[in-house]
Length: 241
Image (cartoon, rainbow, N blue to C red; front, side, top):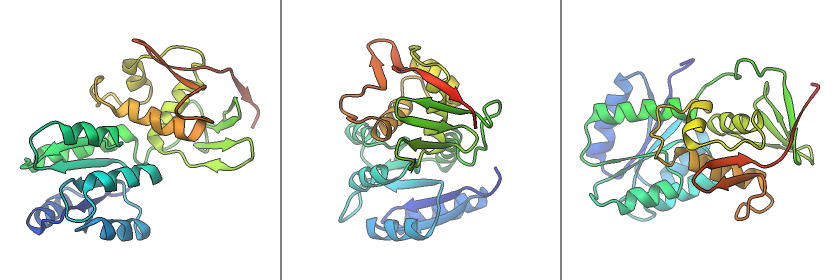
């Protein structure tokens, strides 16, 4: 890591929030805390964090609602916490874009391992991809600048793309019209720590479609192939810098 990863813990229970903050601080993380949704938004407005640990069962606006709102506005990785033992919160949380889920009570070392895995999987603080520097690719109405890790629309406006999404998009751009399985995408996008049956790739696809597609509900660029995976269904041309 080029710097200490910044973790925001969101939990209304101080007896969980504070000891966890102390533990993660000892593991060389920079830790911030919030007790509710309002404090979370205020903290994120003034602090650039790398990951949010978010409790689901909070008074007022709950964690699932906050997760959905954060995912609509940011690519910050999110790990959900819940004291409930059924699978419904986990399923809903993953569908809303969380990157992992752990039940309460939890073993701090397990949560630590999950934090590190999510940070690796989502590519926090990753530099330009070796072998693609100075390369620029045009596809449909988009330009992907690999050295700058930027996505530019036909109107010249740069669209923010997180590191995890960038690596996934680059994998597609380098292999246009080729069907790629989730397993292949896990390898190509440097997400091998993830289970091939989890939702990490699907969540990234959803976020990319929201940025790339004219109609994300009826995608024309990144298409789903039944029992196969996904394909970038357009031609790609490399252009001079």
